[in-house]
Image 1 (cartoon, one colour):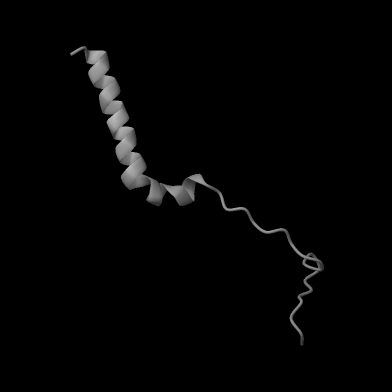
Image 2 (cartoon, rainbow, N blue to C red):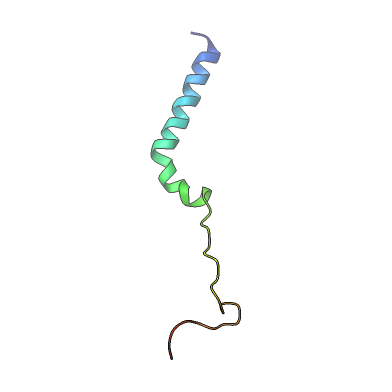
Length: 51
């Protein structure tokens, strides 16, 4: 077989293995969580909890 074909096959297999086994552990680092928008009164320290 041609060396280029073998190289492409190895790269595809490596990406598949990372996708199957490594993605669950890498996912928190790749995707950034979206913070919820602050509600009314959040900027001045007010809360909605009754006193």
